[in-house]
Image (cartoon, rainbow, N blue to C red; front, side):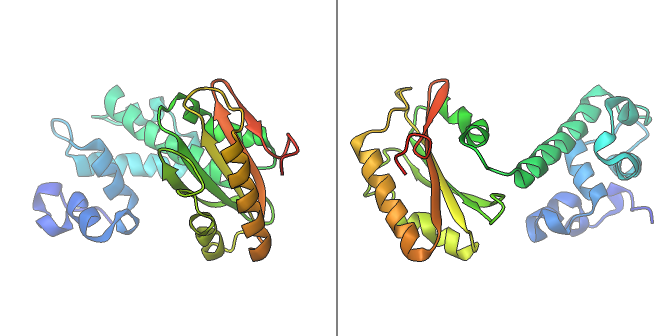
Length: 221
């Protein structure tokens, strides 16, 4: 079924208004594409373009290319790049969600960007029995210490998500990932809290300039 032209839609039926009212999960593929494209071209409005692109995306899925999208009349490099970027972002997030976080290097690959941050950031990853990510939470922004990073804040989401284990990660803006005495004390406190709850603290990574230190690898856990 073809959609009405955009100008014929009541304001409440237009993609942006629907997203504001109901959230993105209630929008069709074509409506999401219309928001991405933003505008149509001469003789081809954004609804028509989103319908054509939707047909190709449904057919080719992750294999859709710039050439596929640009074969549609009215879709140039800018619009095709925007759509392909969104598809690639979705693919990468899907791969991350299926990734088994079974080594410190894999975790570092996800959070190595923190080495460039000038703010100390403490993140918790919640895992299932296969070390697959169930979710993640930013526990603290700023100085990381026992007062700000309380076991309750770390393990409350773990209980809610029925996580089997937790990995925590934080960065040292100085660039030196060497654990401080405070880092060590905090990690021990979190490990003890996990034991009480039956949720293992699997590792604590400190990210620094160009590398990391794993408490598990260093025998500190």
